[in-house]
Image 1: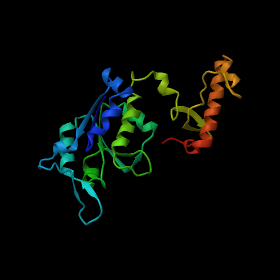
Image 2: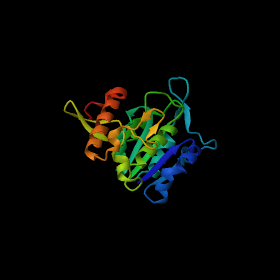
Image 3: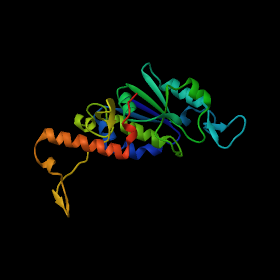
Image 4: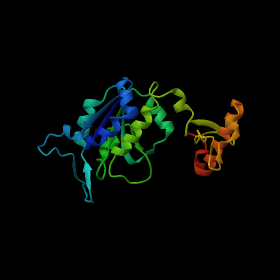
Length: 233
């Protein structure tokens, strides 16, 4: 997979992408991550990427020209262009799984008051948000999305590590398919103070262990994320 990121603040990505899983995935040749400075596609001496909004208003708007030029250079026949914006569809594990199967993704990180509307209308394929709150820019959401999809690429992690985890555990609830949170985990020591590991996990009975884990995962989901127990569209 190839991931191109267009941003006004490329240095923000140095730490997160130069360590841990994402670095290992790049070393293995499983993913190629390229960070591009949007200012490289400007022509004036000040490398201007933003301007005031027609009609007035507070804040600056990212101009269409540098974005158009950047995408014209980076896009290929199999590219998917994703705009990080609060107006976008809320990112989730299903979307991450879909993205991880793509050959080439271009992530456009927003900043300031947003983008010229013509970018939304004509230059991108999809708009994504990571939640209903306000951030300074799209760089952190971009990191979240890259981290989420890279770990799903075959060969990056053990297959079971991404199969049996939160938002990936399949179940049924009221005869409807859904995904639930991960089941609780325990490790050594078997007893700490007055708190003990559930006996079923020590039994060696894998059928009972699986049943227990699914029951506890469902309980946790009902308590913390009941919204997940709905049909996935």
